[in-house]
Length: 149
Image 1 (cartoon, rainbow, N blue to C red):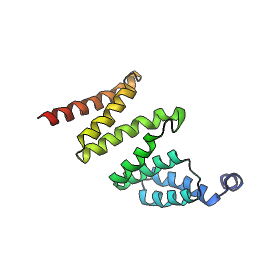
Image 2 (cartoon, one colour):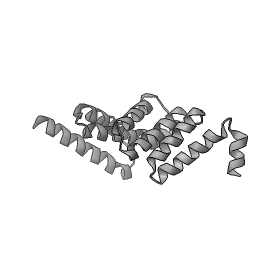
Image 3 (cartoon, rainbow, N blue to C red):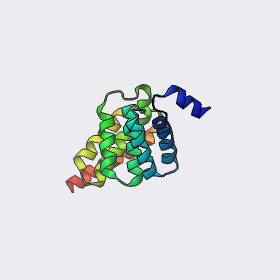
Image 4 (spheres, helix red, strand yellow):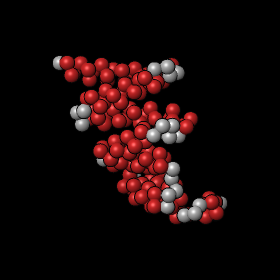
């Protein structure tokens, strides 16, 4: 049934199948295969750009390609309301990951900016999410202390 749906609903069934298979490859932690499949789906214009950027960021992150991960996450956060209501699930983690990547490459100013955006966004989050906010605030404090010391 799934194969029939792809053929009937997509102008490029092979690209649609590649997008689905890319998600499977990511879930199974096969980033190289996922990147190849995402390129195939991209040629068929199957994925909505923000969705593609997040998948590409995830695949590059799993493959250890920090610069490419940051590139695609930055593209994603530059667009307002990329996923509408789903942004709550992906935008804040993107900010946190960008902060981590900047911190890893020694770019404290950029790390502080992304971490600060995350804290501002989630400062009024539900109590069960406040642990994440507290952890990022601790990173901010450590980075500021390191800058002074």
